[in-house]
Image 1 (cartoon, rainbow, N blue to C red):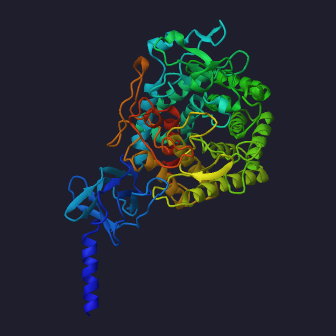
Image 2 (cartoon, rainbow, N blue to C red):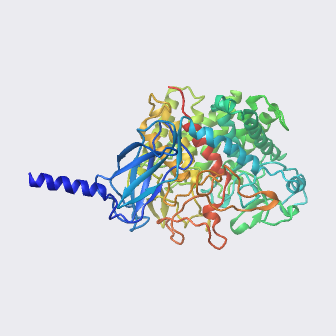
Image 3 (cartoon, rainbow, N blue to C red):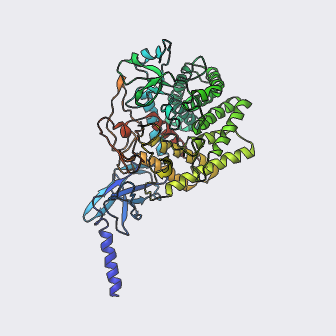
Length: 593
């Protein structure tokens, strides 16, 4: 009996002193919105493990009444980030009552609480899609200075001038306009204005009812058409797209030029787009929007004619325009998207054949581990922005492919890619569920949380919020095809957990408690000013968290809001982040069962 009483007293004391040995407590949550029926967690950060049997409480904001409580999970260390920090998950997914709440833990007479947050049905699209629209309206390159200069901008090394009005400024600190940059790296190219345009088109078609209910359908579709107009205006008479309109970071708008871009802002006349340099996604966007039969500056017929003319030219000249003269995985998935959209729009066999070949190419690029191979050797495909685009392109291809064996092959590719992403992410202690990846460094393949800082660019590494969002879109849209389930997302719970972890990381549930959507949540990066009235825009997504500054392989963890001018790596908004976040939210918008 004495032993039983002693054990009971010890249990009570240890429960009351839940955090007595844990030191200062920080609680990280999604500061913007949790989906009512989604995966919902907060994470505690402490200096030592939380005691066993510890509990947390969920309190309603106004009444401060406890509405839910639960056991904390076992504390974990991510030693790759820090040997001093412990993370403990508080899972309140079972709580589904809409409202505004905050998490609380109590210990040694102290009460630690999180920022308040919302739980609502369709919370993510309701809050973030109007915000994203507002951000891109803000990013339009439509100041008087830009419009006057861009209607007669010079081609680099030439006295020829072209009209390139429109488009979106690339970032909160960069008013240049890109189809893609980092072309010289061959393997790191992001899809910028063309991908954003396609993203608006896809969301407009996937969530028509939501946009109508929200009262933003006309404005949303106008933004898609605005992007398409810039793509078509960027199509040269010869049939290629102009890759970059570069500001040189100079205040005089007349200094802007159409260029090819190398490291350290060195410029060339290599401004013609290969598949991977923006041409593929531009063709895809023009072909897809041509079916809307809506006009802005151009007609639907002109959109389609431009897409077909560009396809014919790039199919012949892409290898000449590519910096290394070889196709790689980015060419495959961008050409697949272009061919699929043209096949859907026209039904022509030439696009069917190209789409099928590119889908087969992607299937051949799978490694035995499950990740894609980027080149014709053994370089793993890793990407700081578009990691999910191979799967997204295959999903779009399967919207029209009906030959059984070809569908099976594409579905097998998607399944392998999804299995790999789940496996590599769960392969180490990972309380935030942050999407991990394989990469090569020094001739060796390894896995990690963040991209290596020693890479083909020689200088470019930054936060990877676009990568997280693109993988979210890929995992959910692809998962519906290979891991279907009877729930409001149509996909199995493991994938839903993976997806909500990425979105919540971006919205504040990360080790810095920083909400990367500017103007939302409780803690944002500082405002960044820019030329012509641009700068940080409400609803835009910042770069985010990286591996430790100064460590070549991307290990460690870092986030800086001041760094002698280099803070852009973490705090600058970039349109691929926000464009891909739009696709993540589109994928996670609850469907009817």
